[in-house]
Length: 336
Image 1 (cartoon, one colour):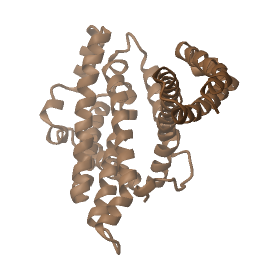
Image 2 (cartoon, rainbow, N blue to C red; image 1 turned 180 degrees about the vertical axis):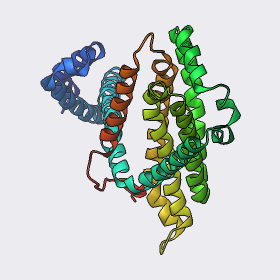
Image 3 (cartoon, one colour; image 1 turned 180 degrees about the horizontal axis):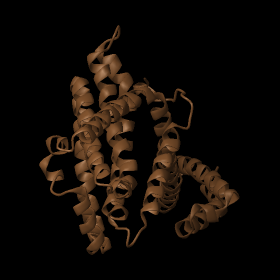
């Protein structure tokens, strides 16, 4: 085929591709329509073929430059958009499928971490109800500055601790940073020793149970539920999830059974990192709740509303993570 005929037969579709590429630069994909996108992909492929054929016919820099620019522009649109869609779909699937499937599959180790914490809470609560002086023995000094009733009276009679968005954000950032440290400590001890992870969860349960016992003895337990409940509904499970991830890794590392340690760690890896990411994100949300909503006294938000919010958050988290039956998910080379 001679060059003139080649250009004459194909220049209309090159012009059409230029028009479509101009459209996609100013319009979102959903506004282009399926038919126009299909046409763009078809013309892009034909133009790539034309570029290859043109190189065998001529060395004309203007023609080859135009076709090369068209093909490059089409490539950037098609494959960049495709990558963006794949990335969005991967993130969506991670949170809607992979994370819940992981927690369903690892519910045994989550239950183990939860029982350790619950046992500690029962011990702490029982010790304080038996003798209130045990509260001072069990609770760290920084959490034992005044009686619960005095604290409640001070909070309810004073100004709100959080009175601006900036202050709430700053306080929330401090809280979730601290909580992530606690969760990472539980994870690390669980991964290295197993027993250490169970102990730190038990110990934190003792502290919470002892504090709850003091508020109960002082008759201000409703305040305690309203104050701790909204963020505790997220914060406590997230710390347990961090500890559970540590126990899962510790079991693979220290109790490999008939398999090699490398094999058990590889099989545990997908569950561990998903649980840690979920725990970290939940702790960030908990910190924001604790730095704002939880801090308001009954003058601003009634106790009943805060307790109801706590129940709703806990139920929503449980339904999200554990509503699905145990099933295997594709995990690539890290499958457990």
